[in-house]
Length: 358
Image (cartoon, rainbow, N blue to C red; front, side, top):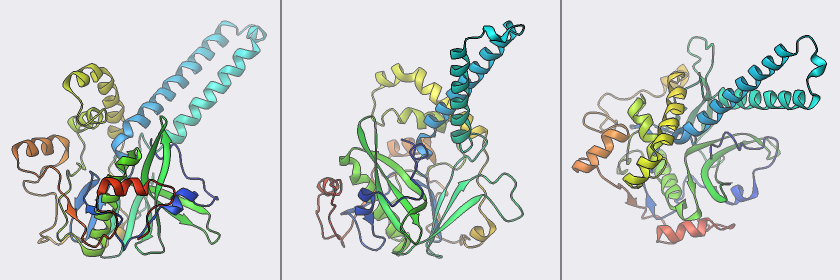
């Protein structure tokens, strides 16, 4: 579920479950290290990764589109009723007026609250891990009228043990969902603001991927890109129609059968339309000058990717893997890990209310 719908509760303490599952930036949380599909680009200076809503933004786009259509339908219906009763408005049932006002208010609220960050906003909201500055920079919202060098609205988080990163547990469709979340708190320990990194996972067994992902980000920030396994894919910073379609198709199952995909194709195409509408009405993010100045890439950096023959996006990467030109499941063992050595069993331990200690 899109973390923008079920947002954090500002002014309240961090949820107990999240705080129990706080993540260390210096100690591994599992026996393996791998990216799980979160990266736009990586080099010796910084790594740009996705925020949690990125991969499934078509769902929120569809919800907002439905709200706009509902709003338009009720407004036109109300105008038509008033037009037919303009000589005697007293003939309009009071209950109809109340229902229309409630519906218009509800649809307007949804369209404005959630549509402002989806349509006419940003094509992506990258989260930048800058290992040189030991900071994370995250673009949160489009700045409508930025001044010279101001860029979009960007938060800055220090990469140290004082920063609070947790596994957040939510629920959707009677399933537990998980993602990695950062919390800023005030002097009383109450949440001021929060954001999520990477992607969400469903069911406790899939915490294996989340823990491996955290190890990957921490290794980069603490040791650099040396010896890091390749990401399974670099997301395109210039998403085209094919990429939008593949996002929506794979959202219905990476290993789904051809029959299932053909059956679901009308719905996949509809979701593709929502995603394209969101992407095409938005612009590319603009980093503040202060962030851009500390994100200079050495032209001779051997770890600057993607470049050259490296595939970018779903389409190119799938074909490269089929040809054997790109690794299928790149990962490495974490030799420093002293806990449960089976990644799946370790994930089940982390899913408990009291996770394993480092």
